[in-house]
Image (cartoon, rainbow, N blue to C red; front, top):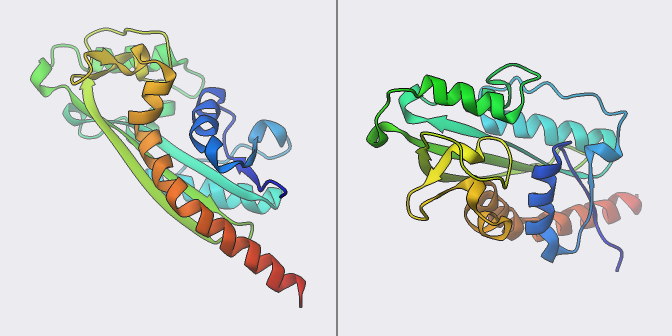
Length: 212
């Protein structure tokens, strides 16, 4: 049976590897935006993670003619009233590195005691057909903002996101462990449960249109 082609709406290779690993059991043929260099950067101007994920998934599905999966995720810090939130990737400027972003965060958190350093990684994932039919799932992972970065795995804010129950930052976890407990992993597990039905409906819809 021919594999279903799906485009992951990202150029972030770290994010792509995580998604590929978790969706591997579904046997999909996975592409990323790196395979479609002509697609312009999609402006993420939504007020929520879900709005941004919907915008990306629908746009990429329409432009590629394939089913697209997009996520928008970020860090919500209790002491910062939810910031950086949807601005997580642009927190220290459009061209900032991961280190510059989390160092800015640590600067803003300077002097805040451990008991008030609670935070959550939040992820919204949307799957869309080229016709714009979309489904949304979400996941989150609670933790704390560490006093200093630790670990070399992962990407983004992982080095400063501390998980008290494991005694490690997200960046100190082996990839297979992170892919069980992260916000993206939790959202992707939900996606895995709805994706077969979504793909089946899409196949039947194509067959119906083909018979017209």
